[in-house]
Image (cartoon, rainbow, N blue to C red):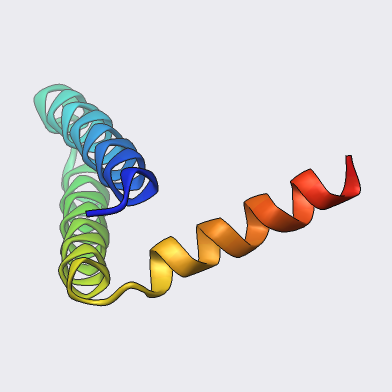
Length: 82
């Protein structure tokens, strides 16, 4: 597995963890009214959807070498211009 892919995977996992912690905080403070509770539920569903998309993307990217090739091309371009 390409090292850049591992860094990307770690970054996404960290971001998902931070979003989950934020959602937990929001849910813990919810309860001031029905409208606020509805907004909190919608927020949690959006976070769940984003996490699902990220996991599906990482699963797809792990089976292909396209992400590694993309990082290599970007780094080669940057190094070539320096």
